[in-house]
Length: 337
Ligand SMILES: [Zn+2]
Image 1 (cartoon, rainbow, N blue to C red):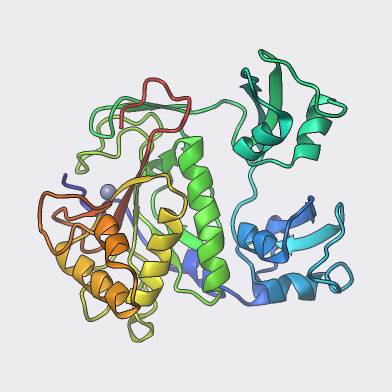
Image 2 (image 1 turned 90 degrees about the vertical axis):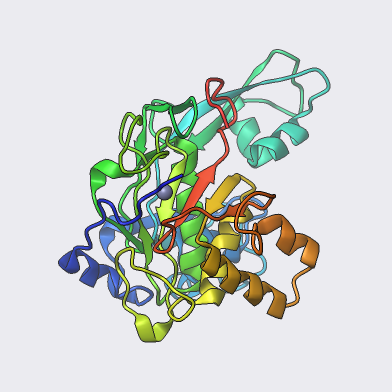
């Protein structure tokens, strides 16, 4: 499972100087200015995470609307200077099954029930098996598809990871993924940037190429579900703006664990590949923080060096990045996990 890390990642100094003002309001570029309409049940924390900003910033930009932070009014317009890209949305459809009801469908699709009623012009809750319920999903007009395996597959309608002020990557031609991969990355980046607004900056290596397929020197990265992300380094080793060799000495275990946990929480991670000795650092970090042993064992292959379970597995060459593989997106019938 060779996955040569820094391949293609060229840190561009001038580009990054703009990004490193992370967290301050200096990056209030109009490009990322966005109006967020508050939906039912949304909290300030959720909204902040979605745009990679802090609750404090949201309050500063919207003093009137956030006066009562616990009770945002539905439909209120919040001004946001997003630190992650805000993507376009397209319609997708859910076919109603026997026994479904609107509330359950809304929960399953993770959308607000009133929004669902609005889009579909449904009054009340009356739906029938076979009805097509429209809902909005992030991504461009043409849906992507992950085909085959990560080692021998391809990517149809690959979506490029957009640039964002809170993270950096090298070559644009090497950052294509499925719509789901791009969604998961942007969601997780938002949460990580919210937590660490002053950095470290998130360094992204390669995903897949536009049409997927062979992508040497990587063995995988073929079907839009793989991504390489740099470890976080201790402050004394900053700034780190490209994938650099990471050791027990320079890794920031607490921040790197937060990054990993954010991705694990999506429940869409099939594997992560990390060097054995870096697994050890994180394993011990979790032990020290008194995580349950059964949880730790489910996450790490460590102390084993090969075989056995664990989402995080050892694979040579993963000392300058974590390789994350997502499971097949639901509905991609030709995808193989
Ligand atoms: Zn990789």
